[in-house]
Image (spheres, rainbow, N blue to C red):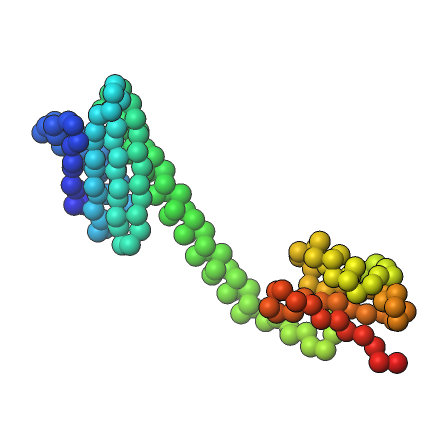
Length: 175
């Protein structure tokens, strides 16, 4: 692992350098080719350690504030290790589930359903003017159409949102 240690307002001694390198061995075991940028700084009475690990295009970052610099480094390493373990577990789970799905599809191929009514929707049809129907459809942002009885013609109509998202259309029977 390539390690770069920066000190802001604090001198990076050999002891700090060796401690950081020894602690980063815990992170290095997860990756073959990685680099770490460690920044240590002091703000008021707090010692802050920040580590950014870059590996194969993935970045992990953690920061910790403690009164003791070594405690801050320990804590930030623990946080990073947790992030890395969580990410690896998530990837492994996705790979496992992906392979199980492929196995199930190979064993029992799905039958494609064609020319069947698969879903029914039920709507309350109220007598409304086209303007009132438009206002009611505007009140329901998740709906794209609304059936209603046109009080002017006494016919069942459907008002729908046009693709431009600003205007509306109405479907009305001829007879």
